[in-house]
Amino acid sequence: MQGSKKVLRGCSGGADSCRAAEKLKAQGYEVTALTLLTHGDGSMVDGARAKAVQLGVDFRVEDVRERF
Image (cartoon, rainbow, N blue to C red; front, side):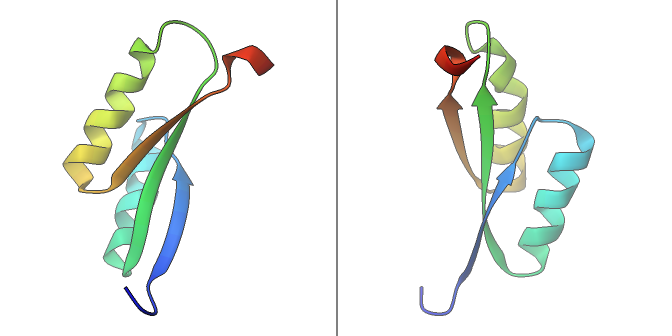
């Protein structure tokens, strides 16, 4: 898409990060939500993924457990 504005937005699945992603999308940005997997088995990402789907934005998870 020529001239598209892309943004990578950290997303915990909480109200603040989701509202920010929603506002960016409304302003015409192509939003990708990013959640960092820092511990556990990944089940904590489910809420963030569900919110991204609800908002209609791309979703990515970066596994950084080895760094923590």
